[in-house]
Length: 302
Image 1 (spheres, rainbow, N blue to C red):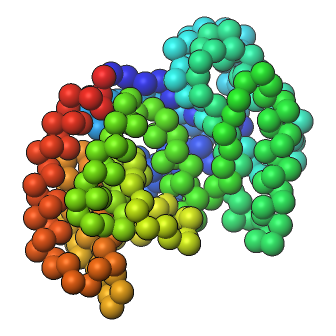
Image 2: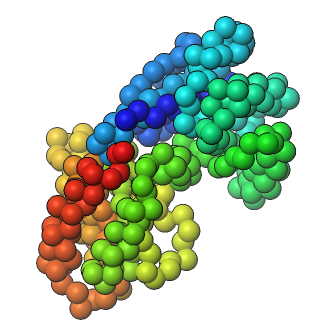
Image 3: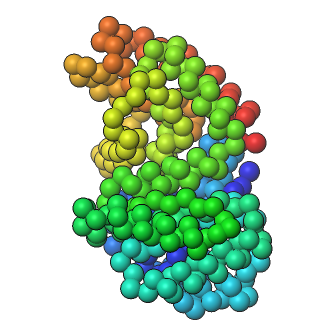
């Protein structure tokens, strides 16, 4: 089952860099050697077995943008599940950026009216930390107004921190069929394990697919931070010709277990009860594998 995803925005906004970090295992500093996208680059990313993201990375040079609307409108904008539009927060051509964005929305309305719209206000690391929230809220407010009657979601992002994982986890989450069913089963698993929290990650990208929280945690950005840290550690293992399979982190007041759950996922189980033995949690994960593998095969890729 293929889901068409358009990645658009003006040239130099950071589209290809973020795609390369999420799906091609680049680290941020290595994206500097990436060239500009010419016309449209297609890639197919297998996600959760039979779910395939058909990603169209559209070059943002003015000539290409004009061509998309003049002669390729139906081809580009037909059967789109998600439009991701990337804005460079430091752009000095905001009105032109908005013009192309609204042209995209017009084409989406005509060809894929049910598509989900995500706007990424990118390169936020270049903005002083104390004014980031203010600038993001102003841009988001303007985008909501200019996007009507379509509803949008927006994220402040940077390739240099975990915000990129937060945005793309939300995007991918919106594409997974029957995701509520998965959340229900994760909740049952967390209860059986007596876990504070259970988080499910896609195996290759380490994007968060779903989670169940029984005991609230004050850090609302913890999932995307963990995605970033574990993926970097996994890449370090690969460079050392080692394969990352599982990990246990234990301190005085908690233990965290990372392990393979299905062919396409990792699970993280957080325990704050010091009396629970590691072997018990590992056994629960082992027993759950067959159940979640069957669930993924029969329900998550329809």
